Image 1 (tube, rainbow, N blue to C red):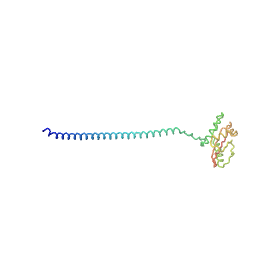
Image 2: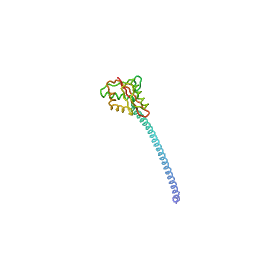
Image 3: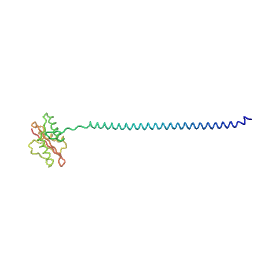
Image 4: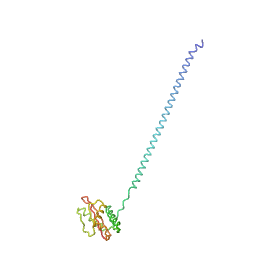
Length: 204
């Protein structure tokens, strides 16, 4: 009888113990979940920090690459730049690029034919320039009265074009290729009408 009387009490104790065990398990699970969540958050932060660091490194590398590319471009540009020829100065007279080309192309044609090259002459330069300038100012295309052998031309756009025109004309070609000529003067000016006026003069 005593055992039967104590039985309900034992059942109650077992029930209470089961409840306590259940809550303890729940609390442990919650703590584990919180710990896992905290670890996950920490890992996410670490990953984001690494990604941010990687992006920062990539940005730095991109900047360095851009600078390197810019430096390479500058170096290439410097290599591609051809140093201009020094102006040709004779007796204090500085030739323009156009005059220099006419002078050089004329001598190129003489070399092809085994002829000695012509030298630039101060008097001839001044005279040829005066004639070319006069034609450009007045728009009148005619020979001057300098007394020198003379080639004139009008309308050619470049030194190369005017040399071709003169070489295709027997009289002008004779002046350029004459063995009796040792000196040359050249001049070229653009007229008010936009046309280029050219002059060569020759002497011994």
